[in-house]
Length: 345
Image (cartoon, rainbow, N blue to C red; front, side, top):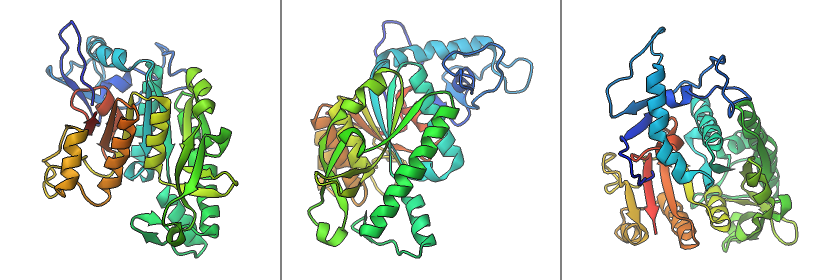
């Protein structure tokens, strides 16, 4: 969700499941350098405030004039975010659905190609559960956190760093950008410490310190860092850390323009029982009041607190968006409509 001020009138538009802006960029390693003769498309469509786009030739093919109009309308959003760091926490349904995973990857690549500096942080709960089941190790949770003994921690590290992380790097590379896979261990990016109730949870940690120096040259040279949410303490003991927390702390340390948490809900609801009561934008004072009033509860509380903490440390805005929606990242960044709830300072 982005509000853009421009001297020239800008038509309101939003991205939806099938949408022409992506058809302007070829799906190939030359993604940032489009080839006129390359006809593979990324299969998206935009809902503009104007009438449906005229088509030419084949069915559903937007005309050149319509493509130009879409690019023109995108300009103020690109100008607002060009050169800015955006930290995205990737999780939920977007990790398990092949279609949603492809959507997130192509959105990241497009954003990188128009000058944004995206950083992707991920967990991998479903994959961890699957491997634990194969090894006949029961998965146990307390207060929404995975109980992590030494054996489980070994599986968590192998799955997050060795499988999920490298799979995401490969997908981003195949889509035309260049990604680098990291974890909190690398370059001492993150230093962990045990959570206060570690006696009950085992090797579950929180972020004690962030050293973003290993990330700066990567984003400066146009790479997309992909970060697994595990890290070690000062003694080298590995810990499993909540990916929302990692994303928020990294966003703060980097002075990011925006933190985005992909979730399996529409955003913050005024009425938890009414899906149509989405709160599009709210400030820290307002969202704290919603927590006090019980309107924000359960698993949404730690996500909201993560956003509040990151904003308090200098991040401009933080958004909790619906990761079940295709191309939700583009909806959030490249339209006024947004794709969930934006929290401001």
